[in-house]
Image 1: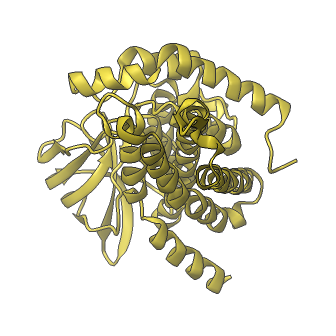
Image 2: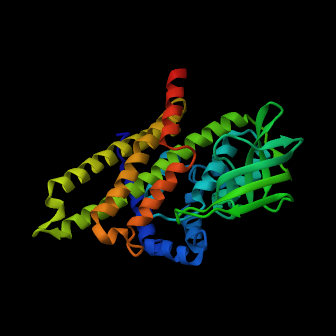
Image 3: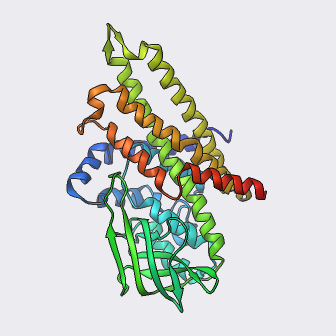
Length: 357
C-alpha cells in the first residue's frame, strides 16, 4: 500500500535506525553542543560513503543511488528521530535544483561530489528572492542558509533583467561572506550569506521551475525529519508515563495523560500517511507533488510542536532541565517550523495551488 512502508522500505529504515543508534546517538549531539562544531565529520562520511544517503535522489550516471524521494523520506525520518546533525538536507536541496535545471556541465561537475558527500553544497534560498544580479555580479543578503559556513559551493537565486536565475558561487569568491547564526536548534547549522559584487556563474535552465521544486522538496524533507523527531519525542513520553507514578499509579493511567498521548499518536499516523503520499507523488505523480508536500508539512509541523511541548510538560520537573533531552526536541520543533515558510505560509501556498488547479 502507498500509505505504509513496504518490506524493502522497512528494511532500509531499520538499517538507518541502527546506524543512528550506534553511530550518532543523542550523546553525539551534546558533544557538538559542547564543541561548537556543526556536525561530526566521521558520522557524515559514514552516512554518505557507507550508507549512500547523500546520493539517494541523484542519478546513477553521476554516482548516486537513484533510489527516489520515498526512500529519501524514509532515511530523513530516521535521522530526524535521532536529531542527527549533517549537511544532508542542504546537499539534497542543491542537488534537487541542479536536476531541474538544464546545465549539463554543472551537473557533471557538482553532482558526483554531492553524491559522494565530498562536496558540501547548499541552496541560498530562504524566503522571497532578494539578491540582484548585474551581468553575473551578485549583491544582496540571504538568511538563514543551511550549512552556509561549511559549503564549498552555493547555488544563489537572484533577480536579473525582470526574471530570475540561479548562479553557482564558490565559497572562496571575492566579496562573499558568511556569518554563522546563533542556533536555537543545535542539530542544524545555518548562517547569513552576504554578497557584495560576487562573481556568479549563471546556470542554464528554467530557474523559476527549479526553485519551485526546491521549495516543495524542502517541505517533503522537513516533514520527514519532523515526523521522525515527533515519533521519538512521543515514544520517550509514553515510556516515561509508564514508569512515573503519582498517587500510587503510573501517570499514564490517568485519563488526562492517556488521552493527550493517544491524540498525539493519531496526529502522527495521519502525518505519516501524508508524508508517504507526498513522497510517492514526487516519484510517480509530479503534478501533485507541490500540494501533497504542503499537506505533509502542515500535517506534521504544528503536531510536532504539540508533542515536544507534551514531552517537557509530562516529564514534570526533570523535563525542564538541561540534562534531559526533552528541550532538544522542543528547540528542534520550533526551529524547523521557521525554515522555508511556517505552517501558515504552507496553508497559503496550498490555497494558491488548489485555486489555480
